[in-house]
Image (tube, rainbow, N blue to C red):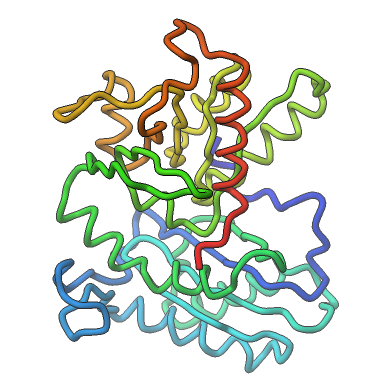
Length: 307
């Protein structure tokens, strides 16, 4: 399954002008690129706010990211972060490229390897296409917030937060689990309609798993057998999930079922529930109306702006 991160989006022209979020992961045998320092309770922008302190490896990598526009003049770097076990950078390709984007990522890797004497990265990389409808500011902030999010995960050790007033599309919902998943600028809705052909389902499955491996959050009620199988495969590769349910959650103290409890403990699950109304009106099975409402909510979450 992990080989999927080498695949590119088959429908995209990687020679064309475009903005991307690039992610590359640390090789297991290599020391950490940085360490996270700071206090999660410190005000944002203060000296004590969580940040990544780069070691020698991290400084070399950060310098090479900064220097990409020197040998690729059509490129602009909007943001970068060197985390202990991975790197992110947002790159804007403003002119059509003579070579596939992957060739330039390989060139960046080559310069890092030259200065270190070894390649610090796992094979391949992940790219996320920043489409026009996606807020560039959201993605830049997502990169900058990486140290804070990691510091929060380390400080809390678990993700069992609850919020009974999450406002989405004019309605309030209950959220339980990793509430930070709603702040990810890359969220996709997993919805499989009966009319889809086997080929369409396979293409969607591949696309969702590719995206999930790169950190995209998948949101869905995961009702049909096909959707449940997709969720299972997403969880196998450590992908984050927002699960929409049709009934309000019990009052605190609430503890989800064992499987969901384990996913919450990993920080890979957020459960979203209606606040007061039982959408299936007490039925043991999910009603058709509830399915429509949950799918509509999934699509809203995936398409909304975070600004």
